[in-house]
Length: 184
Image 1 (cartoon, one colour):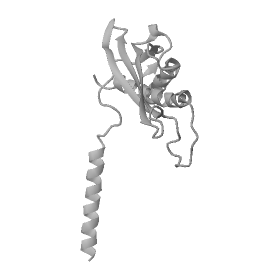
Image 2 (cartoon, one colour; image 1 turned 90 degrees about the vertical axis):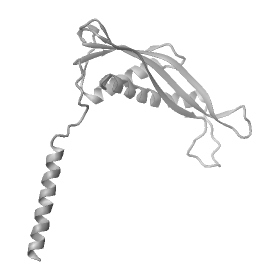
Image 3 (cartoon, helix red, strand yellow; image 1 turned 30 degrees about the vertical axis):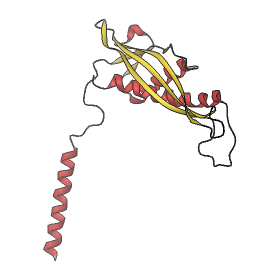
């Protein structure tokens, strides 16, 4: 019995050591190096009909880069190795669900914000990439989607769209940061 316990213990120690050796080469983050150290993020150019999107999208893009932490964000384009150019190109609204009593009234809307991004190499004077399309979708609810059948409160479309815009901007900012920080 004692030999069996010693054998099991030795076996478990060997398994634990092999597991630690296997995990020792694992590294967090992407393995591909980023070819620049600092970035200037131009304020987003809003050519779409997205209401008040320029400031919030620009802010969320910066937040995504700050959260990642691999690049230094600079406030002067002359100090940057790369310049990110974001153009909010299109904003789409489409009725998602309709009211069963009045089919001309929508209960929620599917929203889509489309951006083109370009990354300029300040040092070489050319682009790393140009006009890559990044898209984010969300839903704006007129009714409370979590309320029961007895909840009849409705908010205006403008109010529901206003509530959805920060979510769209946050997720679009994260996607843009992922495109810039991923190997192209």
